[in-house]
Length: 212
Image (cartoon, rainbow, N blue to C red; front, top):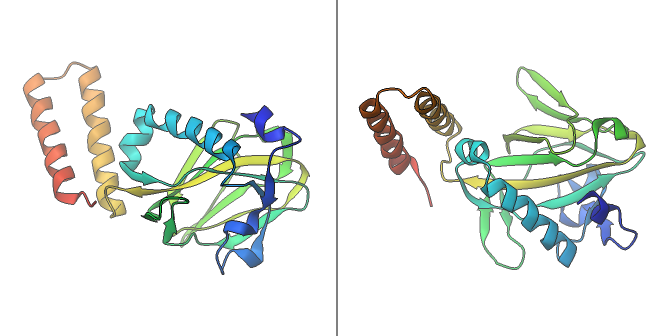
């Protein structure tokens, strides 16, 4: 994937092409043209890996995933503090997606560039993240966040948005904790009848809370 992104003929465009009114004034990066065959090919690779990742599925309970967007930040590029738009239209489909969760998949090694930290803010503080290639971070799409200016090297990443089956963040967290507990108890060969009962509670709550 890195070789594809670094190819001389990769169709990089101004990242403001997909920014809304709030984001465009503070967005300075480049991204692979969403309509290009390369974007679709690389996006399919990412989505294929996510479908096989049990932890991602358990935490997110995805209903729809926006096709991954591949971006890069060279020296002096940044994305100022913003909040992701609540609704996005999936290109080429006309389908609307509610952005419950945002995701950043780091594609550059952490020591390949200087600056470029992802900062996620909340009402009690902030988290500053600079993860290694292949690491993924999820955060609620209502979070204020930014990418600090890159002062050297090149930062490449993949971003996308998820509409979960469970709109409410707290309900989604409860289901995740219950599912992980069931998995851990299964690994320890806990009482089979109790596990079936717990699984029954999990799926009852999932049915009650799921939104299509």
